[in-house]
Image (cartoon, rainbow, N blue to C red):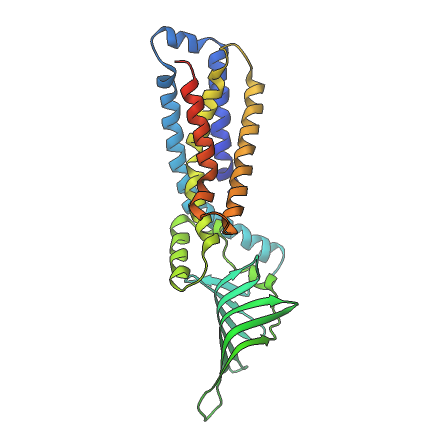
Length: 302
């Protein structure tokens, strides 16, 4: 994950340092004297950054999700000695509670709301005693409030008895923090898996805004290396060939890199809240920096 996060910053710093050195040593002047434009000089670097974008996306698609899952397992199970009580299987949450086996379609850790709930109460002989189906449950004042509840009791030698209640407080020994452990996060899923998960929960009528934003964010973040490398080249060449130095380039790279991550993180947060469309929030930072990089690149003297 750390490699995936620092690739764009590394590309930006590399382009800044490389072209600053070329400018300081008058090699840019030599290239222009031989009829090589700055645009042609930049082309190999831009092509290389495009290749790096592909590699970074493949890394985030196949390697990073697995490594994040493994890291979480090492932290919770091997270090903190927590017993794994639940799992994420077939786009559903399964949890082995103290009183039974729980199945949820989705859990939102920000609002502490469970969606698509099925609770199977079993005895010591693993015989089903009661089943509860509910549309959703919300954590309020230290209690779980269930909505549109269908309770089915199974009595030996008799037909199951059904009871429907619109709102009911059900005493579960688990708190939201218990379910938050098994909720699969977006950074533990690749783009393809996340897309399948979004389609599934949308088809079942649940709000998938948070996951849609993260899904588009994975693609948007993969393209940022190209944008940053163009900014790095443009900034290095906008001043006179002998101005500035390596330390100035590093400082500029740090400022630009942090600015991108701040804007990107803020836009994703706004998108997850539903204030702006998911695709706009995911691509907002890329659009802003893309426009800035285009203007800067066009203003560079050929």
